[in-house]
Length: 123
Image 1: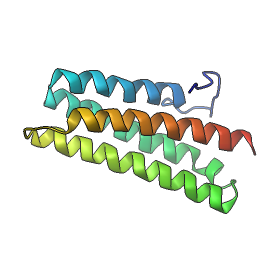
Image 2: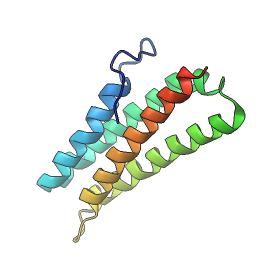
Image 3: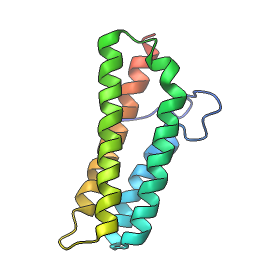
């Protein structure tokens, strides 16, 4: 899967490429077992992703209703997994599901972004 690095929604500081990079960086932090750092990084990504979703809301509203619903459901799934990751990192219980959750977040984010780009290009 690839992301078009030139795909730009304007003044959004957390563009598609940066959000994907942040998601992949979570994997590395999770592998180190530093729960405090993982919670912080996942929280930052959560805020960035929510900001990004809000900044693209006008584009989603222009999509056909079924497509818009699918995009919104995918965005919510990413948010839900990120919240789970933050909570798991904060609890730091053993065995910690953090590595698996971080991997899932990275995959979901990349799939979501690629899907959004494809849907927006169809407009």
